[in-house]
Length: 213
Ligand SMILES: Cc1cc2nc3c(=O)[nH]c(=O)nc-3n(C[C@H](O)[C@H](O)[C@H](O)COP(=O)(O)O)c2cc1C
Image (tube, rainbow, N blue to C red; front, side, top):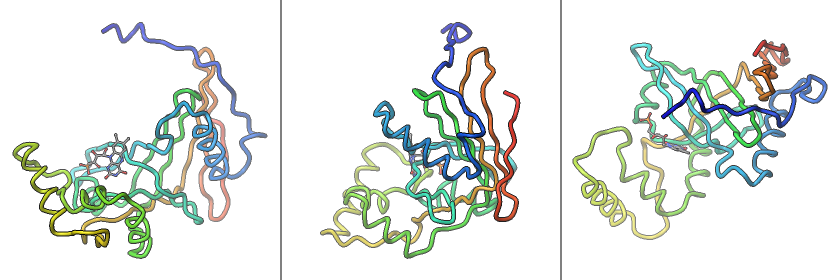
């Protein structure tokens, strides 16, 4: 595969300070709204989540943004006993990356991480389809398993143990809130002269700067 021949010219847009404004959370909402409205992106709320493990190694995977809270926290849900849960227990810091290819836009976020409240977790869990709620009971996320059949058995057992619609939240399952202290907006431009605006939190204010591409 000739990766070096894979090249696109970004020509969709520009990111200027006047339009970007002073508040990165408002800009984020505008951008994800455009991404969703474009109809060209199946999961505009998919974000790469980077953590570090207890030996200092970076680890990344995709998760889904489920809420942007009033205090600006980016919220996702998972099994807190899996690999990312262990990482975040040791080092409660994370970075997020969104990539909306048809818009030629990237957003990067860095911040401290805390648990969602039990109330928020329960409220979100209740919105999940039944089979997703059963799946949360059936999977010891990030642990090895002998084969697919063994996984299917675990699902069937969890299903049988929780007949009906009333399924409690597994004790190991819940959300995380990433409160950004830095956010960067990237818009692809021609000649690799991309626009980059970085916002850093300064108390209640945001400090904005333009970075070279
Ligand atoms: C588009 C996409 C969205 C995903 N969303 C989630 C999610 O919201 N929560 C989750 O636990 N895993 C999600 N996953 C699976 C994770 O990428 C990952 O495989 C899993 O969480 C285990 O990661 P870990 O072993 O690092 O804990 C998603 C995967 C993809 C491809």
